[in-house]
Length: 124
Image 1: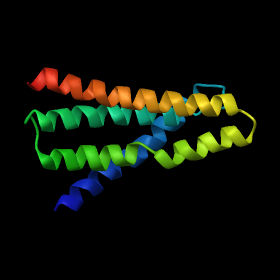
Image 2 (image 1 turned 120 degrees about the vertical axis):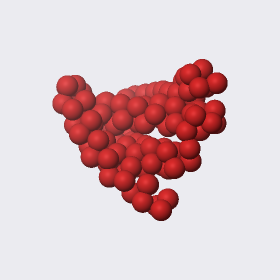
Image 3 (image 1 turned 30 degrees about the vertical axis):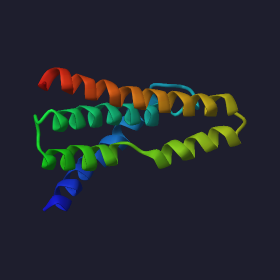
Image 4 (image 1 turned 60 degrees about the vertical axis):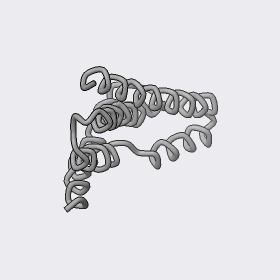
């Protein structure tokens, strides 16, 4: 039954990633991968909230599987982040590639910490 929760979450997360990425990227006339950046930060924030809620006892492990593993696992994308960063570097945009690495790591970790703290403040 646990695998079904992950599948359902992923079935929502994958198209949400694609649609969000395209919507965000279409609003920016730049080679910087804003769409991937946005979905990775949003997914990290959601995962932080879900993790904090589970730690506070406000939600159950099945919800963590559905939203955390399924939805956030399909919403966020390390492979696309890596590919887009490599493409930036290969096309001579090395500064943008480095900025993408630094900003993505800092913002995603920050979003996860904020999400966990937010959940702790709400459900403690």
